[in-house]
Amino acid sequence: MSEPDRIPAADLPPGAVRRVGDWAVGNRDGEHFAVSRRCRHQLADLAEGSIDADGCLVCPWHQSRYDVRTGEMVAGPRGFLGYHGPTPGYTQFVRTYARVLRLRVRRAVRRGEDVVVE
Ligand code: FES
Image (cartoon, rainbow, N blue to C red):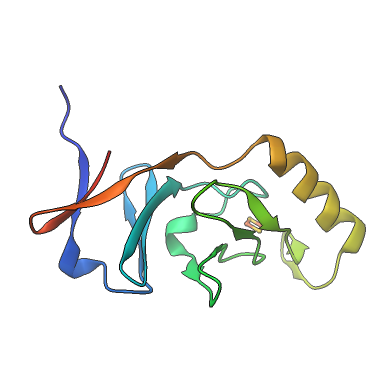
């Protein structure tokens, strides 16, 4: 049996997102989450993302927003490749296929001094 993915809880303060193996693990005001790391748009590492005021995980490249409880993309990208700006039809297209290709979701729980991905 392999060791679970874990991170010291002290390294995951409220508002933080960190890389833990294949997972982007975050702390939404004390509620931990774990989702797969690759954005459904252009595969940015979501462990380098941020948590917005609504508790969504925001992609660092084009700001797609994800519901970390379901893995659903709730807002599509604002740009593509090196461009950052409005792309109305494209944004909706990406959001449509991301409905099928949701992020994988795991429970992330505090165990002793660590947060463990189950
Ligand atoms: S790679 Fe995530 S929104 Fe573009």
